[in-house]
Each structure stands twice: as C-alpha cells, then as structure tokens.
Length: 403
Image (cartoon, rainbow, N blue to C red):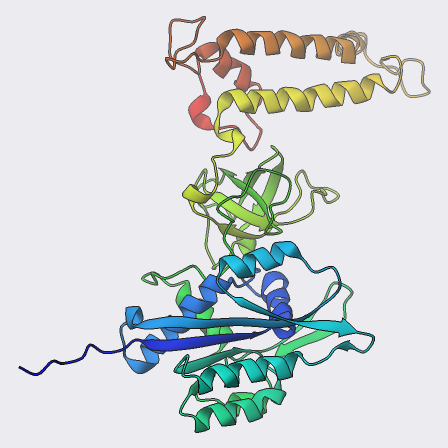
C-alpha cells in the first residue's frame, strides 16, 4: 500500500519596515474610524486568514514561520517595545541612527527577506511596507517562486497641528506584488461575526496592573453605565475617574457596550468647558480574563470614592478662609432662611459628616460569610444602600443598589 504524504503547511514570512509600520499605527490609532492600533498577533493571524481565503485552504494549514522587524534606533531605545517584539517571537534587526538620520534599514530588510527565501524558510512573503524601493526585492522573490503580499492603503489626514499627512503604499509596489489587499478591508472582515482568530487591534497585556496608563499606552476601566438605546455611556477607570464615551468613539462600529464590560481607551483627563466628564477616545472592549473588575462594581468602593470626592471639595473650600454666607459682600442680601441653611453647610460640618459616614461604612462592611456584621441581612445591607442613594444621579450608581 502506497504511503500518501501528508500535505505540508503553507509558510508565511512577515517582514516589517519598522519606520513605515510606525506611521501606519499612528494613522489607525488616531485617525481611522476604529482609532485603534493594529497588533502584531492580530496582523499575523489576519494574513493567515487572507491566504486561506485566496488559496481555498484551511487556515490551520497556514503558519507564520518567519517574523522580522527592521528599524533605525537611537542610543536609548525602548526596552518596553523590545519586550513586545520578543513576546511575539519577532526577530529585531537594528539600524543605528547617525547624523544623517536612519540609513540602511531598507537594505537590511531586503537582505534578510531575500536570504531567508534562498534558504527556503517560507513560501509567501508578507511585506509590511509601502516603499517603492522594495520593488526590486519583490521581483527577485518572485523569480525564486515566492509569492508576495503587501497590504495596501492610501489615506490622507490632518495631524494634531493641522498639517496634511498621508500614509500610503506606492502604486509601483502595489502593482508588482501578487496580492495587495486593502488594510481597511482586512480589518472590516476581521471584525465580522464568525472571525475566530486573534482580534486585529491591541489588547491589554496579560500582566497589566491597575494604574493611570497601562504599559501599552492605553487607559483601562469598565463600562459603568449605558442606558438602553442611548448614544453615549460612561466609563470608570482604574483609579476611579469617570469618563464620557460617545457611540462614535467605539471601535468596530458598535452601537453600545454592556454594563461592566472591561475596556481600553485613550484620552486626557481634562473636562471640556460646559461638560461634566472628560471624553474617552477610541474605546475598545477587552476580555474579562485580561482585566480585573474595576472598583466601581462594588457598592462599598463606590461609597468610598464618593466620600473622597466630597472630602476633597470640602477641604478646598476650607483652605479659602472662614466660611461665610456672603452677607459681608456687595451682593444682594440672602433670605434669612437661605442664609441660615448655607451657614450650616460649612466645610467643617461636611468633613464631620464624611467621617461619620466612614464609620458607618466600617461597621457595615460585609464579613467573610457575605453578611453584614451589624444588620441581620446579606451585604450590602439596607444601611449602605441608603447611604449610596444620596448619589443616585452619579453615572457610576447602579440601580440594583437601591434599597
């Protein structure tokens, strides 16, 4: 009986022109409709998926065997980015900057790709670049029987200072390669239901620890409120700050996100004039397994955060000098009842009230058995629910906390 050899997998070699890829990431992260940077793992799987469609081949029979990244580097390169490359199994090739800038990166990438092709290390080359200088490399690879893919893009945008910028693939290069699928079309397909490979944009690092900004350059938190049918919602980040998020800023053309969905996003914690929250940008969901549930999911932590906010305001008022009702100023005098009421709202009284509530909170925090140690009921008890109801209009307040 003749032995039929098993079919060999199709091997891909992915080669990154680091300088060009940086500009591509900047465009997708800040100016594309998704406002999200492509991830290395996402690109590799996206190329496997594309080849499987073109060749009518099972995607599991397509493997990435070569990963190379070439870019000029200064005297103090980023060790964080080096760690990302190492984690993804990407070989780093350095070209040192000199007084004329980056010189030799294109040549080094071409030599590496050609050398590995001669050694038979891959069947299909994926060049992540848009530079026409690589046309001779493409032609030589094709003579070796290597097919070449270069994802295509032509995009114009305005940068932060209003200057017109362009990121694109040279027409000469796109017309020389075997396949030039559009980056945007690839990402559209990868975001459709049924795509089971790696999400194409950046996820959180699995070892991420809570903080202002994660090592990936993004802020992190979870959806604390999104009413059904609403075009906007709110995020609470890892330090307890609330952010406004519009439907337009959701990655992947989503209409909304579910309550408590962990997210990664961009944005500065500056509240625009006339608004109540800073805006979150480029909001994308992340797996629950990759990010711990944020503090605002717990009523007790919600109360602690609100008390800290109230305390800060009271202390700021106290620092301005003695508390008065304004009777000494040139403004029209207040009604006696109003003046009497305001006189009771002194910072000292507010701080005393906060301390009393903190003591109540301490007495009613749930024990190891999940029950309130003071009240004969499960935690959070009615006492804590009543304390939280004062903040009913806060975007992080959850309706299930109502007594």
